[in-house]
Amino acid sequence: MSDTPKLFIPQFGPIYRAFAPATEPLIRVAVGLSLAAHGYPKLFTNPAGNAAFFEQAGFSPGMFWAILVGLTETVGGIFLAAGFLTRAVSVPILIFLLTAIHYHTQFGFYWNARGIEYPLVLSLVVLHYLVRGGGPWSVDAKLGREF
Image 1 (cartoon, rainbow, N blue to C red):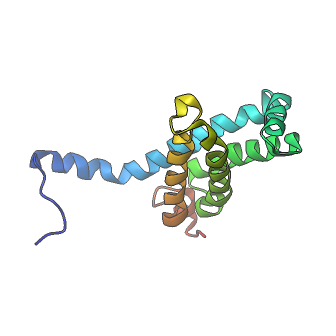
Image 2: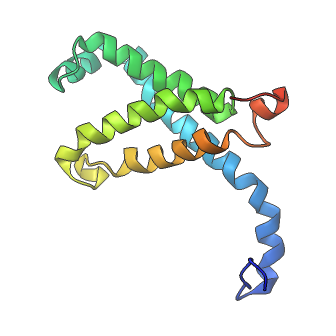
Image 3: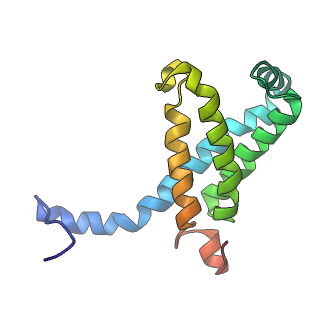
């Protein structure tokens, strides 16, 4: 007995096999760039406003936390997207996301109500890369070394 289930439409098998190697790198790039896109404004668009938010949220001094989170998202996101130091950079990103989940629990689950949905999904994806590494389509693989 095979561990692989039979496809309802076997003709799709070659398509699935052709695209399978690209799925993990595409998810890694999408999540990394999404993080970077959220971090960049914290550093360069409105750092004072972000510092005020962090102060209001109980993270003091606010400017320190705004810069730290902005760097984590921006630099960490770019590194994650590239698959560079993937496991190492996943740790601070995961800590940030778990802190975001803790903060957002007061708003419930759904992200459109500021709930935990988005940071929860991102944290599970980042956990995947912490455990699995950047994969064969990463800078880590090209360097031949990873954590």
